[in-house]
Length: 387
Ligand SMILES: Cc1cc2nc3c(=O)[nH]c(=O)nc-3n(C[C@H](O)[C@H](O)[C@H](O)COP(=O)(O)O)c2cc1C
Image 1 (cartoon, rainbow, N blue to C red):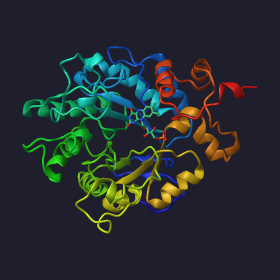
Image 2: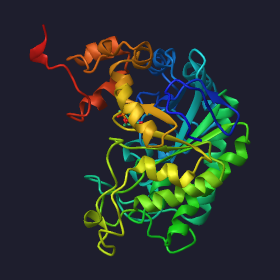
Image 3: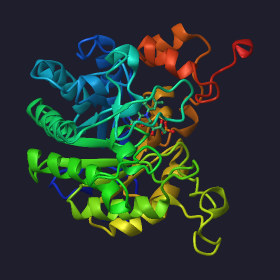
Image 4: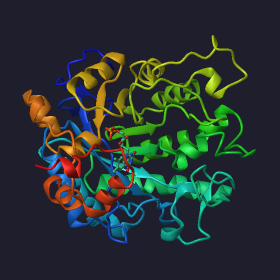
């Protein structure tokens, strides 16, 4: 797939859809939907403003496929009653002619008990996540797994009916699909767990179900976390093997989710004592995943891309597309300024007050609260440096 690293060249996907350039708005939940999973005006404003700029594609916030998998107060794609809301999101995401992609997810063991009820938490195995105060989920049974696969297919069908050009399966960031792939979260001894092949079974079944539901003319992407840093986690080699199979399953793109796209996979001594340093090289995930998919799917890089130089570096490493999150939160017109060469006009810090962030940058209040709850995550003009 990868040929030129010109950021403004159009990118044709297997589905037949062509992106007008290589920049994509990264999926970002606003955490601010109505309790029934319908979109709010504030979210639509957030999305419309960014989709009105020159992104090649816009990926929505994650939409839940099952009410017991809600990890955010976000949009739903689990019920026919969500169709009108999804239509509004699709219109907003299409903006001035970009490609509109609905991201679908299930939170699995990291769904929020306050949203789903204290006893509804379920995951691949009865193992809590490493997050502070994590609750122990119940292990899903076979029928529930089949129902969840059907729920992913149904959510994708709602998305297409609502007018999206494609679907992104959220297989990253420790949500359910990732949990099935992770030997830390998935301790099953049936067909859904154990060997690498068995742990791939659920992610690949989701990919197959979604592809079969939406057909070949729709864009289907899959987001992965390229390695787990925690002891006993999966490796970049494992994720590359999954990416290879995802490409064989006809994914239009494989989207690599990272906080910092320059970060290499861990050194062997960080994680795998069974292999020598020579056997497990520290490698850049973009290079490794691009090699694994070998042109059969596009590769999307993400994580800390703020400048044109960053984008070029990721493209040179083997990415076909560049997803941009925080930079487009801080400056909603980021991609237009990059395209115009107006680099010095790009806002690099959020305003000091929450109220200014909401109004100047069109970000819904719950999303602002979330951003500010993670110190250092988003650069911010200091209160005391205000003029
Ligand atoms: C407020 C916020 C919400 C996010 N929500 C999602 C989400 O719904 N789905 C997802 O795959 N990633 C989500 N992410 C991760 C981003 O897509 C992206 O991978 C991450 O922010 C790193 O890229 P960046 O440095 O360009 O922001 C979210 C990030 C932020 C800042």
